[in-house]
Image 1 (tube, rainbow, N blue to C red):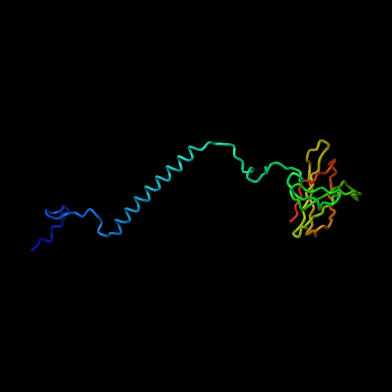
Image 2 (cartoon, rainbow, N blue to C red):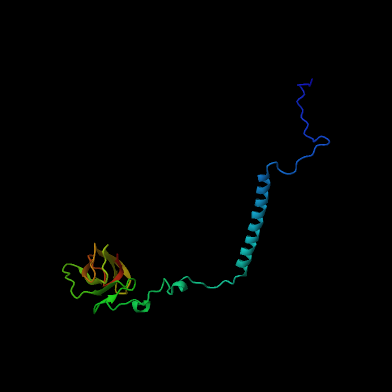
Length: 182
């Protein structure tokens, strides 16, 4: 009978027995091979990418070249290739949107304070609204204040006359700063 109080274990292989060097499950062996292949492919691709990045000459690439325009330039509408034939006489097409044109109005109807009026027209209309901002300028053309007006909508080829009030009477002139036709 065996001594049950002896709790020592013998892990050393006994003579004549062979230790298995390969996993018992063949799927584990396949997984190891696939892992080695994926690591090798990753190293090769990383090397190719690094070599191509280091081999490229750095140039002054501008995304604006892709679109044929520079975002920071604000050219006249004629330079943009927009069709401004629809723009009525004495109106000026807005440089940021070929669908809208404007002009200063002849009469302002300002009795108690300074104001300017402008007329706006849209080729296709502004069904979701028309927004206009005016900068107030001093005698040196510095922006000293602003005002804005809006309409809930404007039909195609309909004229809108908006009045911009300078309640403080601190400006010498007004300048259209923004027109948004939605």
